[in-house]
Amino acid sequence: MGTGTMRRRTVAGSCVAAGAAASLLLATPAQANTEVEWPDEFTSAFTAMAVPEEVIDGDGEVSPGEEGAMGDFMLWVNSETDVICYEITLEGVTGDYESPAMTATHIHEAAAGEPGPPRIAFPDPEPVGDEPRTSSGWMEGPFMTGIDDDEGNDTGEGFTLAQLEEDPEAFSADSHTEDYPDGVVRAQLMQVPLDGVETGGGGTAAQQSIAGPALGVGAAALAGAGAFFLLKRRNADQQA
Image (tube, rainbow, N blue to C red; front, side):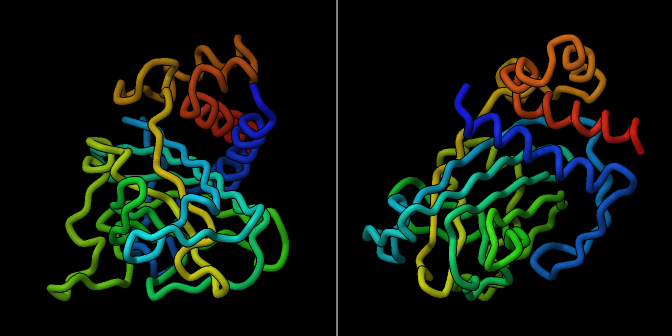
């Protein structure tokens, strides 16, 4: 297992620890202001390793982002309740964010090499000026982006996480800055195992916590991002 993978699994624990004591009330205007309880289960998990070379402009032309930058997106989804949990890390990114949307860090409905509208706007990773920049939490639909389509509707309106599960490769993750308004980094979403099997199995926290302690952190990470994430949350709950 590469160091990047281990770093991603370890960073996920910070999101868990932050939310172990209580549910999170989403304060930023980029999402529906809904108090969200931690999901009892997830139906899928996704990752995106965003790089500057994948960035394109609004016409689909290559428009590289910041050289040396990297974005690490981990997403856990419950499509039945329309809840998404996220852990985002940006490294090598400089300057302030900039986007006509409510925030500058998004999931777009856009296949590889193609532009497309934002469907989810995440809180931007912080702090600006230091690295790594991180953002973590969970939110529930309906989703809002602050961008209107040609008919005057918000591009998040009507979007559900079931659509993401149906065709994850049709969605990309990115972030935008003042110096790189087309995108500082970008990548397509890739589905990853949950519960050690293909995602969509609806693994519960109880199922995942059985294997975790016996296997240890490294093996739990191999068993699937969702299993490791929930194991870390269970441990944080016990220490609270």
